[in-house]
Length: 116
Image (cartoon, rainbow, N blue to C red):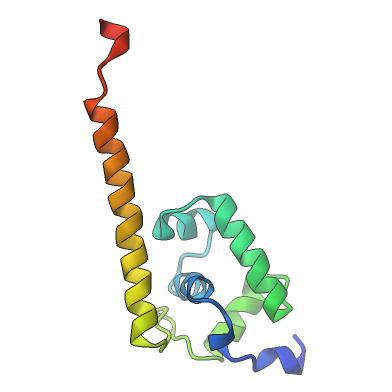
């Protein structure tokens, strides 16, 4: 890891990227676990991790983990980001869950064509 990359300001990352790092440091070490925690696909997580790696100049989760611990994250995944960012992240998760519930609700209201 190069010295210039070691001290990148975490605020340079997007809220979504910071959330992924927080989840990773908190113990969600597989793409599947990260995807489940963020209500998204493993493919999306892979793309986001690639972006994070590119921004920080890393090639492995171990480097990312090391960097995170030395730049504000604790082992429980807590990063001291602005309250507005945390609220926006929670609101986004609630919106995703609401959309998913609406989809499920619409599926339940559809007539069962196979049994007609």
